[in-house]
Length: 331
Picture 1 (cartoon, rainbow, N blue to C red):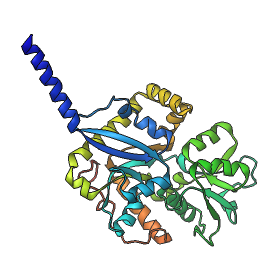
Picture 2: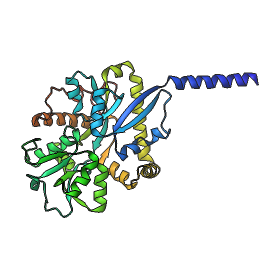
Picture 3: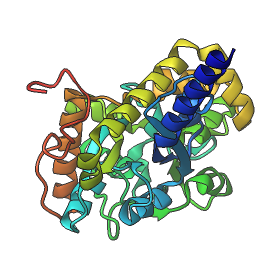
């Protein structure tokens, strides 16, 4: 009896010590219901680790940009544009994974107008107001590239063919409905509601236009970390990537469970998640050759437009050596 109690005590003490030694990886991501589904298995303790704990904080785009500069979190979902800009300021930012890869259907990056609007095409936007989220984000930069490359518009922030009206993401749909802007991009949850209600209609799918022009699935956001932290504890960051990918895989393999539960938590129809993961965007986590090529294209086109005005190398050079590469030659 004494031996059994002693053994049990030692086992409990060992487990407690191991738990106490777990490193905490802090992660901030875009505040989007889809991400709650992707992280469901981590938050519910389905995907676990004996090496690390993951603390998750959702933020809007502007706050994510500030968090990157302030080094508030260990891992941040950010625009691919952030890496060369941060590096130019001496911030050792590196790509450790892919947060969002657009679906070839391009439903996540449409331009919307009111259902009764006289605007029928992108060409009709000349001289009009286009609602947008943060212009410096990768998503809006890609939208501007599409408007320029696929439709020939001058997309200068000032003096171009249309007036960009920067708004908080949550205010885009309301601004369009009230007539404060003539057309607008919408965040994914708003786009889903527009498709359901018919209040707005899409006049272009910019993501699809870009895929057709460049032959790439666009990367709208990446997972970034800091070189000094990555080199100090690579195992913990690789464990984070494993957990995140397994959590995404769990959501896709258990859609009824996850989408129903998260839909209830977020007060959104579970059908949104089905549409999002199958027609809007994927969360691959691991880095593929398409992703590197898409980021290189983004940086090249953004430089040509004058949006990116700092030196940069290739996306592969900006990627952490410890990341998980999927089908990348030499990795």
